[in-house]
Every structure is written in C-alpha cells, then in structure tokens.
Image 1 (cartoon, rainbow, N blue to C red):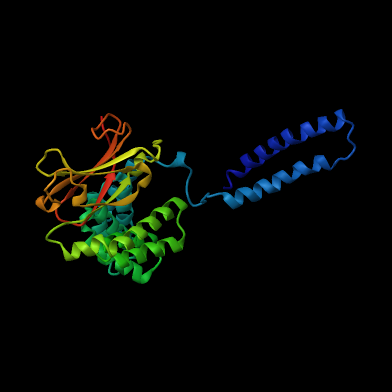
Image 2: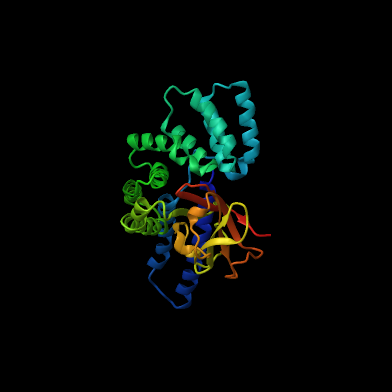
Length: 336
C-alpha cells in the first residue's frame, strides 16, 4: 500500500488537472465570476482516497503478483525445505493446501497426513483441508472420516462455511435430509452471494418436497425402484466461458459395461450447480429398472448444439455409480 501511494497521488493530481482546466476555460469563456466551481474538484482527492480505502481488497501482508514465483517453483522449494525439516507441521499443511489448489488431491492427502500425524491436537484449518482433500480425491469418501471431521468442525465452529457445505452433502448422502437442509439453511443465514443463495434455496425446497415423496417412497419400495442423486457442477477452470443459461444440459446413465444411454435427464445450464434426481421414470428402455444395473457410468454434458450426440466444444464430466445414492459430477473436460 505504501509503495502505491506516490502513484495514487500522481494519478489524482493528473485527474485534477483534467477537471479544473475545462472549468477554468469555461469560467473565462462565459465570464463566470463565481470561483466555487474551482474548489469542487479539490474534493475529488479526499473522496477518492476514502472510496479506495472503503472498497479496496488490498492486503498489505501479500506481495505483488509480479514478485511471486510460479506456484510449482514455490511447491518445489517447500518440498525441499520439508526434506530438511520433516517435523514442520505448518510446512506440510501449506504444501497440502498448495496441492489442493493445483488439483493434485492424492498428493495433498499425503502431505496433510504428515501434518496430521505430527499434530497432537489438529487445528480447525488442518481438519478442513484434510477432509476436503479426501472428498475431492474420492467423493464417495464423504460419508466416512471426512463426515466425522466436518461434524467436529461444526461442533467447534457452527458457522464454518466449508463444513456447512460439505457437511450438508455428507448428510444428504447418508439419507439425513433434514440435517442437510438445516446445514444449508445455516449457510444462507451467514450470507452467501445471491446466485449461490438462490441455488441453495431451490435445493432445500427440492429436498423438502422429496422427503415426503420420492425419498420416502424409496425407503418403502427399495426393492422396486431406486432414486439416484447427482450433484452437477462446473469446474472453476471453465467458469470464464460464456455459456447462455438456456444451453442444453444432458445427464446420461449408461451400463458400466458400455452401450447406449439407458436413462437421461434434460435440463438447462442455468440449473447448475444443482442436484438432479435420476429414477426409473427417466429410463429410455421400457420394462427395465435402474436396479438392473449394479454399476452405471454417469455423464453430465453441456450441449451447445442441443444435440444429445457429443460435438466438439461441448463441456462434460463423468462419475461412476455403484450403489451410492448421492453422486458428484464435476464438468472439467471439453470434447475435442
């Protein structure tokens, strides 16, 4: 911030010149005698400083981007330091966090395990990172140890945003619909971006309506039908792509052994991120049931042509179903 002040002052003075000069010319051209017009622009400087200080997200503890080395270089340097000092808990935690950012979830788990094994009382942040890395590496693991960690985190910090989100997913996967709704409602109370809030509200309403209908029916007639929950989201690396909200979204279910789709859901891109429910009513083959397929290959695809057949440029993601009620598809690939 201090280094930026001379530059800010210079820009302010330059802007002041652009404001005063036209007023000065106007004053003489039209024979205006009042001079307060010349004072008004002077307010621009203190106001601009106030506005900057109010809206700025500058963090003086961070270096400028041009001074930061590439992420992979920082990671290699950190790895080298940990080779020399393997008992550095904070170092292992930072390494694990860096791996998560890089999408190297297996490596993140290994690094965070090093920090975990060396921590008599793991910190809240370490618990969050360790649980998140496991879920990102294997979404199905959310009902295991990560679920336990999210519960511990929420016990100590009831309004932890990540724990509320993942804890809601864990509750949903375990069939505890009321707990999932409660946790996501708490997330809304905290205050999230409007777009995220709208999605959460919609999902909570959907869960509430399904709790007494589809999900209850599933519990009563499990031998006759199945309801598969599919959470579809767009990968962060693709969020900058301009995609109209009415672009067609397909969710296909295929036999794990191959063949054409046996069930399909058609929706719009504007519905994601969101949770979709696949059941026998979505089957394309009469007389069959999702229960006939112990394993399924799930694909979510954004079709820019609206055609169910994949075309170049379409965005998609995949997941495997092997009996788990809740599934996560992260669309992170583009059809070549």
